[in-house]
Amino acid sequence: MPNSNRKRSARVFTRFSAWALRSLRPCGQSSRDKAANLELLPGWPTWRSARQSPGLAARHPGEDASIRRFRISMTSTTLSLHRAILARARRLAAICCLLVWAPVLAGPLQLMTEDWPPFNYEKDGEVKGISVAIVRAIQQEIGDDSSIRILPWNRAYALTLHTPGTALFSAVRLEEREALFKWVSPLMETEYYFFENRDAPTGIRSIEDAKQVPMIAASISTNSDYIRLSAMGFTNLSQLDTISSPARLLLYKRADLGVMSPLTQRFQEFQAGMPDQLVNTGVLAYSQPLAIAFNLKTDDARIRVWQQALDGLRRSGALKRITAEALEEAEADYAIAR
Image 1 (cartoon, rainbow, N blue to C red):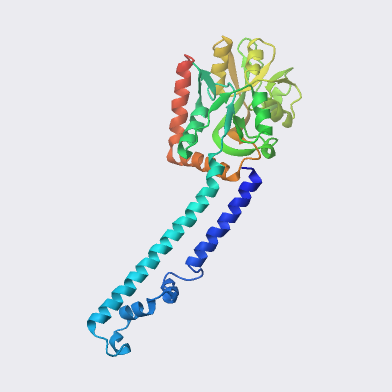
Image 2 (cartoon, rainbow, N blue to C red; image 1 turned 45 degrees about the vertical axis):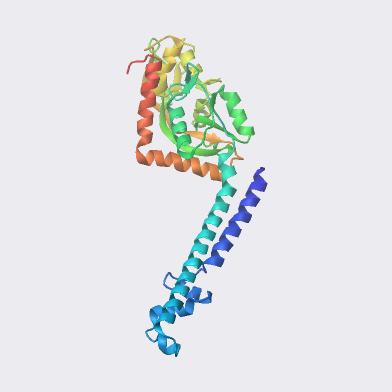
């Protein structure tokens, strides 16, 4: 169903539901006064008199006790019937609302990520990683069974930018990207440091020192070092397409510095076949949250459901456990010692 029709239907059913509830239970009254509205129902005045007035017999001269008991029983039965009808009508209104929103949450979703261990990677045909584990935990919470594909970053980014029903993770939530997507975040907070080759130390001690080296390998991929560092005034940047390129240039001494997370550094060394070759200078470049970026045409209802599920995992402590278990599994998959 097109978004415009879905939203129009949602408005119609929501207004109908609100009207039905107002009709069945008049607004603006306290719970003590609600019973007064039932005076319009057949039998109510008699039932109320039976409960509240000891002078019932005086109001009905000649009525013996058996007739009075029968009348009170009948009016009580009428009231119970009215209450049952009211409860059923309310349930029907709630079901109407659920039927409206169900297509919003149940539509197909294409989830995409790139190869960036330990956050996202593929092992023996299975997509794994810290962010993948978090996304799957969210899916389990909300009953979403969309599959996850690993694609080159540029392709996945372009698809998410232009195709409804798509989402991309783990994307760093940059100010420059904020208006391009709808976001669910943070999956986790990450810090990015300047790294150097053990055999070619730069001796930097600050951001200003880093601006003076001949070349910094910077990616335009997930964390988009190039965008972030350019905004900080760096002009000595090389522009690289993939997240692993800065580490490779640094390992082969084709750049003086590279920006990466301490979590990813060991995995990138392993992929390049040069373990323990990169050294953290201790100079923090920046910190940013990793997030899920949804296409702008994604329904706000879906974004709220995903965000609430992620927040619930964080509040319960499950997010911390999932992160630790996924990192341990990634280290085992890559045979990386702590």
